Image (cartoon, rainbow, N blue to C red; front, side):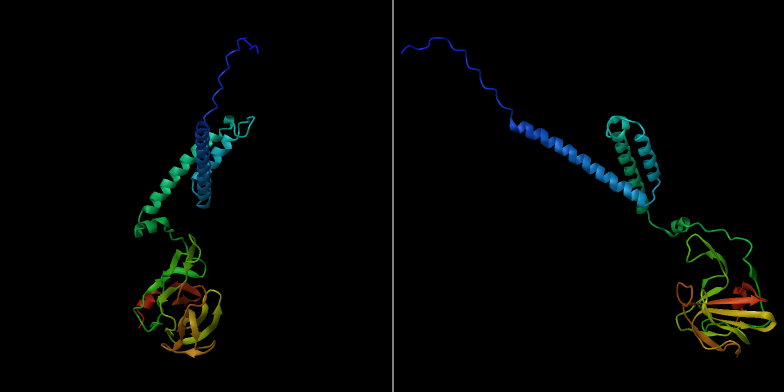
Length: 274
């Protein structure tokens, strides 16, 4: 048989397909960048939420920066014209700075001096509220100390103070709080007649005694009352027991001294009581 002697064009070498390893490397790098961005965004969201919860000053700055970044109108939401990328970078920087400041603040020891500075002392307002005086008063008769322990100490003095129930609010304390355990005996400070032996929303169980010359003593936050209204009592007579009824933070005896219906500082009178 005759063979076809026509020269055939040289057969082109098949092109080599791309190396799968190169594609895999590029894809892995892209995924790594994507996950890094997602992680950064997650950290930013956590930081913004923490700043809002803790009411940090940086929250106001972030809100203003985001509003500025979103003002420019672009064809796409994530375009460079909106400055979202720049805002993200600035947010990360500010949150990092705020976190460092909080860490430094928490790391400092809470010394007594720092605790006092954290809550500034309110200057004593003037004058005293109606029905009270900032002056001391000494009755013209001797008083008996209302507790068996004369050296019990005072939990709170008479006059203006920080309200124990409302933070950063001023409160006028109309008596002296004498330290006493629950059930401690309470005695009448002088001879007199019990005007009130009952319950009050603030005083709790209390007794008010009328003495000579329009003077009165008041005993509040008591556990039990052993006398009744209209009953005559003598100095040193058992009136009841100390407790923690009414508005209190713990057991004690609240003692007041009044003259003609006006409350006075009883500290001097109690210091001279028998």
